[in-house]
Length: 351
Image (cartoon, rainbow, N blue to C red; front, side, top):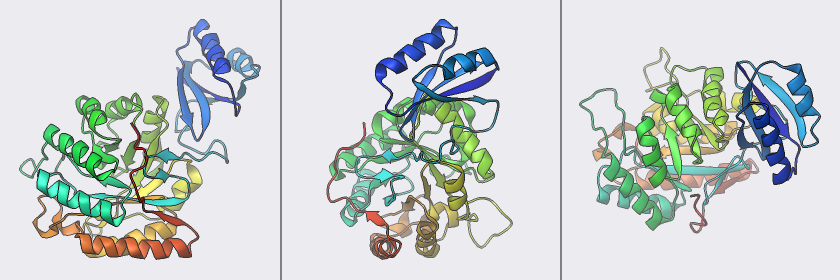
């Protein structure tokens, strides 16, 4: 079975959408509705039926239909005017601004998280990132606090007025993470865990999808397609480095992926220079380069006592270095005719 995508005309009414859904259900299909780049779509399993396509395209509410046999048509720029903008409450990703999401790689304790979050909020971060679940290469490494870590993130995020970005590691944790966080992160190790991608596609939380360290751009967009096809159009792509022969850095940060994705896809893209390099002294130059390449935002590891971090301490910035980075980013953004999102207040957080 193939999938058919029906794209509604701009400004279509809710009644017209409901009638189209009813038409498809009468024909034996189960359509999934989603909003991508401000355009309303229906996705449904179908055979390659010219009669069905002709019937849909004859409806006044439908602008066009596409048959999706494979690939990632929803993740790609099927309309040159479409750009997905993901609203976090404190910032929007994909609207031309530059949002910085910052915090510790792992939640270690209430004191550690509160101290770090207070600093990144004071300095102007647009979101609080932190891991409650930490899938690590070694089973003996710190694995995170689990649900107590999620509870801490939610509490501290509310105190600081910042949306929380944290990782779901399996299907079971998706509902739990969605309860406590505003953005669900899919880490590099799970970037092609298709059952997990389908699970976050059924939520209506924004999803930050990291690139798998062995994935091509096409494979990355295909992973995003699993989420989009589930009806969740709020997907943020995150470049975090790919594995290569080079060993002077933790990974090879592929900044060329930023303009490539901008050309191929309507989805916003952020860059994680912390995990992408694994070296604190490389975070600043790579963050600046990412913005110069067109990134919509950054994901940065910050720890109030970086030398004592339980997870990835070699890449963590202290508050002073983070403050310097934001100042540099502000100057660069001005030179590029862009703006660094530094919220003065919390605004209205999503969810």
